[in-house]
Image (cartoon, rainbow, N blue to C red; front, top):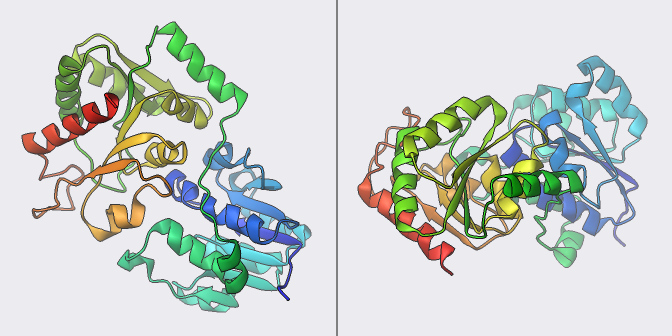
Length: 341
């Protein structure tokens, strides 16, 4: 008979894309233990993504507490299980402080061998699996047989009323039509990208070739000036900037109203994936940055453009050395094909 658990804590305290690729794991814990109370530990900026997941009972924003305060508080959750999908020193301290009998996490640092009594040696740096699969392997450690019996991939995120209203108002204010491309050109630097000038040239050519197209550039409010500069470089009608200073999923609601999404290896691309949008994605070949490890999960309607697929690349440079007119044409052609379906 399978063992049951009453209270389970799951920690995923890093970036937006990483959190979205953990959603299948959150779902599987509830699928395996439908009566369990599940608490998530996340960063403040990720709260909006998970607050509406119907199978999560509590979300704790770790940045809202002093570290000492949270270490004292976590014991009161009285968890049977603590699962760390991402490990740093503070997460390991939280795992110990929880006093959960079962502690699951990746065995990567020396401390992790003394923290997790059901650790998994994964060697994620080799990037032979998808990040979501590495996460699911940790969930499987709860009960392999039960995991396999109930396995189901669910990547869904949920937009709330305020997100939808924000997008609808933006579309209405700008009289945006139905043939919409959303582009997220700005990234944090965890993977290669093309330059702003290259985005400008690509989008200028695309707008000139595709009739009745509206293009929305999405960005965080901190990149607003950069977005306005990009629009000025393009110099065409029907191109708009959605610079988001509100909830993260406001961008999700704008993406949801589009026909096609184009972007690099970044959080909004994974949001587009969870919303089951048609995607053209720009990724490097390097294993630790490649689609094999960091591609969209649970959505097959994706074409990956990999500029350095057949060439050498200097990964110290933030932009692709291998990007050229041939790659640009492949991207434009793929976007047009999806727009005209």
